[in-house]
Amino acid sequence: MLSNKINNFFKPTNIYSAHRPIFFCLSFSGLFPFKIINKEDKSKMVLTLHGLLSTLSHIILFTLCYVRTMRKHQSIVGYFLSSEISSFGDTFQFATSITSISAIYVCSFIKRKELVKFFEGMSNIDANFAELDHKKNYTGTLALIWINLVVMFILYTTYLSGSYLLLHRSSIYPEISVWVACFLPFYMICLSIVFHGCLLKEVESQFATLNSILAELRDREISKRKLTREIQVENYKHISVHSQKQTDPLDKTLDTVIGIHGKLYECCRAIQSYFSVQMLSIISISFMTIVFSTFYVLSMVFQSNTLKTTTVGKVEFIIFFTYQICICLLGISHIGHRTNSVIEKNIEMPIHVFKLIYNVKDPECKEKLKIFSDSLLHVKIQFTAYDLFKLDKTIIVTVIGTASTYLIVLIQLVI
Image 1 (cartoon, rainbow, N blue to C red):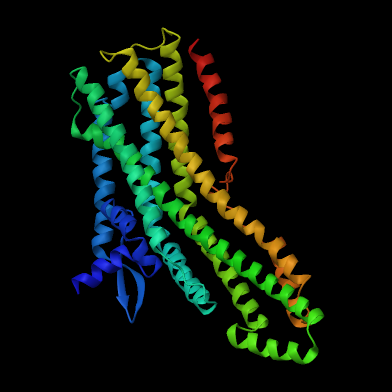
Image 2 (cartoon, rainbow, N blue to C red):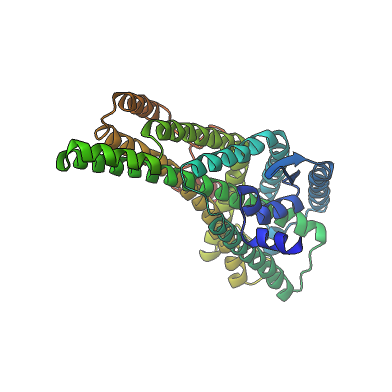
């Protein structure tokens, strides 16, 4: 029994078992109020009371720490510098953080059905691919999830321990409530970004498999056309019957492919619905952090009189805020990269369908492919942050451009 569990952990057989590491991290953080149960060789997600209590306890913990920190006018940033602009920025960032973190927790509960819909849809897609002799290997998925989590924890622990060491060198020892209020949002942001990226990677992988199947069908039809020209009719009939014993008929295969694409589209909609507000919250926090941290660094580099540093040295000051900027930019870039990868894989599909149309001889299959190609041209996959702006490869440019504008305004206000 134990050996089977160990084997399933290192060699997952479905999407649920492959995502167990990140499920554990999310459950520990109160963002995953579910339990994975196995019944009749199938896995599914079930909402639990323990999960709901975990979510509620995290919200209460963060709120209490936040209120205590604000009442005592303490913050990690406040230990590095003290001025009117830093106090305003600190208060504004705290307000953004409490609103955003609350939104992330609330949405993880309210939109829980979308997450269930996604995993059920992906499980059905795996079954459809198995019918086409394309069984999903989830060992690579598990490895990728572990890599993402390890990188995330390295970045997070570096930020946390580095901040502690910088403050320790100046004999500054903040309260636990200050650490929680300042670093819990950062942890939630990192974990949500990793989870979002892992789900999108699964969708991207399924789109890639679908494109490869369409390419195989096209090559098969091209081979049939060549056989028609080179072999006599009697031999062609014999080979045709033999090939049908090895592979599914084209018409049935097309039905399965079209059905898989429809399910993938629904999975993308589920991701969009579940992460829409979360992505808006994450990018809002990251944006404010980038703007104010950049302002602090520039003011320190150019020896501005608007900032009054505490006992922390200039080098430590610049390192702390520069690291914040880099982490936020890295997170936004990761979001844009993952969403754009899914969009590009979906864009490749009409190309394979058009090539297949020109090589198919069966009128019914050709008509079915034409209808499918029309639907591909009209149905677009896109990811947004609550429909306010698109999440694609342009998101990093949008954030940097907008942050530059706000930074210029901020500099003009303090000059």
